[in-house]
Image (tube, rainbow, N blue to C red; front, top):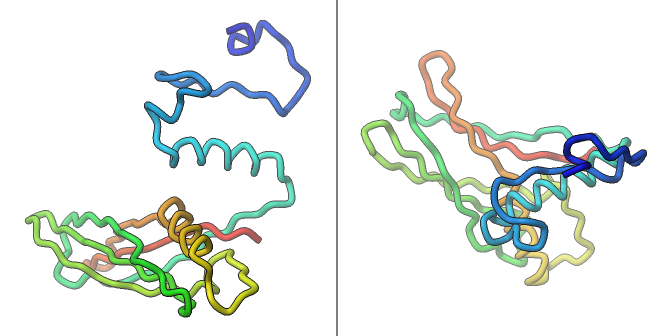
Length: 157
């Protein structure tokens, strides 16, 4: 509490306070999912990496008839160890509750993955799936009377 109220002076950038409404240190995985916790750890590490630059990569697809307030969600399909693509199924729901499923294949070369073997191991496949689930963001964009779904993800440079 003294640290949080700035009563305790600490001359280090390595200590910070994150105030959570629920849970304390080792109980945080109970009220919060790992996406929240890994985002906090990721931001801490990146804030102490001054040479690290993040750029956004994106891919857009036109939605056709889904023009009025569509929403989108995705799931990563199982990876094929011999393929160099991440397959993603996007489910777009219109304001009238019409559903359309789209599949996109994004090449692994468009991500920050560098694997030495020509065939992915099961743990590498799981790592890619977890990374995509955590980092891929979908956004609906309206431009010139048409709707597009944009898949975006960060790249380290």
